[in-house]
Amino acid sequence: MKRIVTMGRGGTGKTSFVALMAKHFIEIQETPLLLVDVDPDQNLGEMVGVDLSQSGKKTISELVIETFLEKGGTTIGIPPSERIESQIWADGLYESEFFDLIAVGTKFIEGCYCLPDAALKGALEGLTKNYKYVLIDSPAGIEHLNRRIASKVDDIFDIIGPSKKSFDHVQRAYKIAREVGVNFSNFYVIGGFRFPEHMKTKAKEATQLDYLGKIAYDEQVEEYVLSGKSLWKLPSTSPAYNSVKQILAKAGY
Image 1 (cartoon, helix red, strand yellow):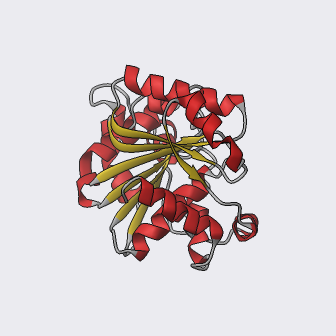
Image 2 (cartoon, rainbow, N blue to C red):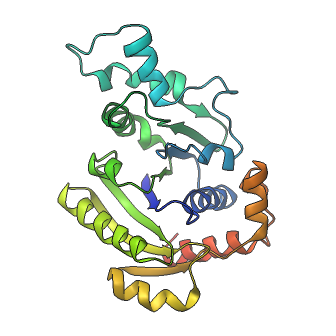
């Protein structure tokens, strides 16, 4: 089992990259996959054709609300994250033939995502060994990384845009991952679909990390995302899809 984390600032094509990476793994029969949506926007499900609500599944945040707010569950004794771990697999896991999907969801109360993240971490440490790949879609913020939702990761992909803030994000994320003890093998930088090709040298110099290329701009991807259509229905000729395959090949996949 390999764990792959994808992060980056909003609007760079991060979630599209995760969806197209999953599409590739399924097509080459590298399955089963576990897709983990840590981004509060919850776009990953839509991009792979899954509606958790219509499927009768709940996000981890919804399970936290149900257990500790609506039902008045106690947080004394057994750690709260352990108390709902079994519920995550029973009520929060969308299952299909080639992949499963779980999502953290939007913030359940005022404050941080500490409890949902802790619950997710416990769940990931449990049954993830049953999957070929665990693909984690992490948001632009690095607080989830700081709470080590996955303490052992094979590869981290940081999707960047053409801005100093994107370069700074990469450096902060790399630093925090090291400081909090996230055990990862590789930290890669990838240009988002709006990242100019001529800036690849700048990306290497600014981040001091391996730059694997950029996600190709693709009008069809924008059309699919706007209409809520699964990116898995993109044709094999899609420039974005083929650029993702090339990036993965450079990373050894």
